[in-house]
Length: 155
Image (cartoon, rainbow, N blue to C red; front, side, top):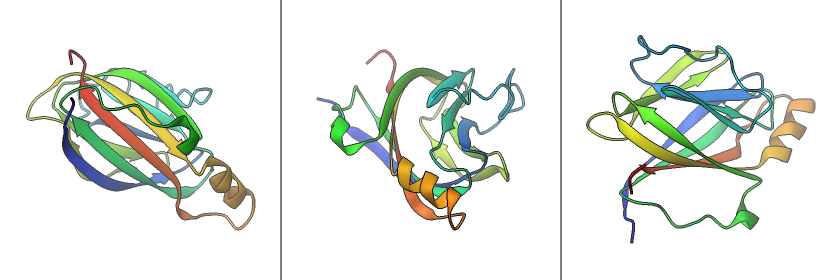
């Protein structure tokens, strides 16, 4: 049975319905955030980078990142508005959250001591509420929530 290795909670400043996670040291990425962002998909992957489309235009989302030593238990779909999985290759084992508005955000998210191949599951809740806030008063904090679960691809 898979065990949770690490849990970290970060805020992601969403701008233009989008945010991303990419290698902390992004100097060698062929397509750095936000180039070629996939606005048509909830989750899309590029080398060293994950793009996530939000329900709201401008707000601060709460992001919980979990690192597992094997395939984590499935998430109950009733608790989430969206779920998607993808492969992800990390060269450093360290990620950072990126915003369309503010660029790179702190803190660093450690996956491992070095790079490797991962699977990631991304779940989101509060999308309709974030969209309504965007149309109404503007911004919100923690209305939209994300869970990102990483585990080794060979697990």
